[in-house]
Amino acid sequence: MINNQDLAQENISIEIKLLLEAIYLKYGHDFRNYSQAHLKRRILHRLMLSNINSISEMQYKVLHEPEFMQEILTDFSINVTEMFRDPAFYLTMRKDVLPVLQTYPYIKIWHAGCSTGEEVYSMAILLEEEGLLDKTLIYATDNNETVLKVAKKAEYTTDNLKNYQKNYEKSGGKGKLSDYYEEKGSIIKFDPRFRKRIVFSEHNLVTDNVFTEVHMIICRNVLIYFNRRLQNRVIKLFHDSLMEEGILGIGSKESVDYSRFGDAFEHINKNRKIYIKKSSIDE
Amino acid sequence: MTNYELVVIGASAGGMNALKEILSNLDRDFAYPIVAVQHVAPDSENYLVEYLDEYSNLNVREASEKQRILPYHVYFAPPNYHLLVEEDKTFSLTVSEKVNYSRPSIDVSFETAALAYKERIIGILLTGASQDGAKGMQMLHTLKGMTIVQDPRTASVPVMPQAAINLVSVDYKLPLEEIAPFLNTLSRTHAGRKEQEG
Ligand SMILES: C[S@@+](CC[C@H](N)C(=O)[O-])C[C@H]1O[C@@H](n2cnc3c(N)ncnc32)[C@H](O)[C@@H]1O
Image (cartoon, rainbow over all chains, first blue to last red; front, side, top):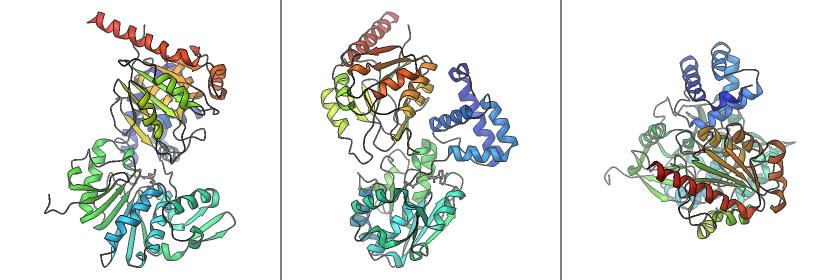
């Protein structure tokens, strides 16, 4: 429990900075350039729930108890995702982007920050319906190994299925979502033909380098957690990983405009935040 | 007297009309930026912002991430994102879990704004059928910000303001029509004081 006077003091910001530094030095997880308000809110909630009296005490506990660090990691991480989130994004993919990719003999796609994989299987279904799945390889990465384990299994609960079905229809789905999975009780499992086209692996956008050269990168609702400096780093990374005229799809509230590499990209569709990397001749 | 620097407003069911009443009656030179959270469907196109912009003297906009918070603006949380206020007076957006079955959640914006602005903030909770906002008001109160709820008797749905009243001893309970004039008065004295200070 934290007392009210502490809440009002500047100390909180200092203590949070020190805590993040400690986490980085001890475990290598770097949250120092993440948006702070979210972390602060989660840290304070953890304090309210525990019998720890201050953030400094929390820092001691983090340094000495790796199990506690795991709890903090869970607190900090945001893995919320869904199938065909923002159906209009997928509709634009279907209508304006896949016809361009289709001209390549094979296609490589990188989903960065893929979380538990719902977005990746959505894309795989889209590719299948547009006849491109067989010549596509999807690299799906996240820095959180726990969510990747879920993604690899291709199994999800039926809790959100209604919403997914609605999204799928709005995204221009050509069949029924149920064509692509088997339902067993309260679990659905996507057909193995999708899993075969996907390589899941750990990759940290903050600390790791270029992953591989690809035709398209999808990274949605990850940049919003980073400060401008980190956003810059990541957009450079994407720029370097894309072939000329490669495609970059980001979240509906994200942008490359503020980045030093903003000029290297052109909108395909402004409302959907889908860009094409200009070829070096135009630059 | 406190120098306020920010107003946060939360609304749910019935909020559209209540927000219109307030935003259309604030002075053109109203001194404090406003952060507003109205519960909306995740896939709504934020028609609300355009609609309220028509009626208000202030610039009503959807908040974007990293944006600096400026006077003469009303910033709305985008549908399906939580809107967080940073200490450096900018915004962050997240898609973390729903809070009180809502995204955007009023609690999330109120709590982070309270921590960023401490006592220099005015929180207003309006009509709604939700429990959202009560904890946020508690945090505002704890950090010595000013708390105002719409008098539940004047709310189209009284549940939400009542929930806050049950949890916090709020500073003011005002009928809807009195909220904008009250804020204008605060803002004008603020402007007067600034002039005196030169
Ligand atoms: C909100 S989820 C977005 C999931 C999905 N892209 C979507 O839009 O539905 C954010 C994901 O970014 C991942 N992430 C956060 N920091 C990262 C980093 N430094 N490197 C790689 N992934 C990261 C998180 O683990 C989480 O799974």
